[in-house]
Image (tube, rainbow, N blue to C red; front, side, top):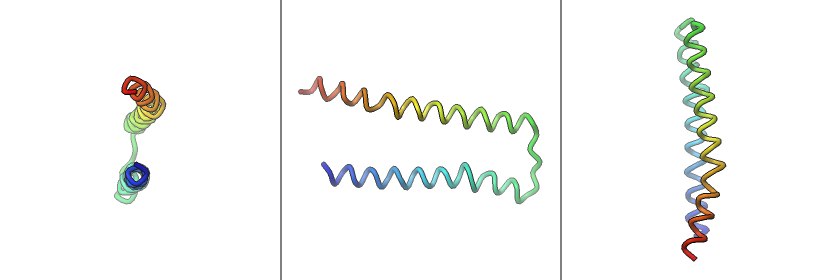
Length: 76
């Protein structure tokens, strides 16, 4: 079981680094390099999407362990 947890942890770290690179560095960087001028509506949309992503991820991170704990209690 420990080996599987280590393997999953490494996978999660890779995904986190990859998504951070894409959404925080690469995507905005390409638009900056091409000279794209951010409109206020685009910036608001980007902000809303980012905050929505943050909220959903936070809920998942907070609720998932509770659900797993309840499911383990039912299996015992």
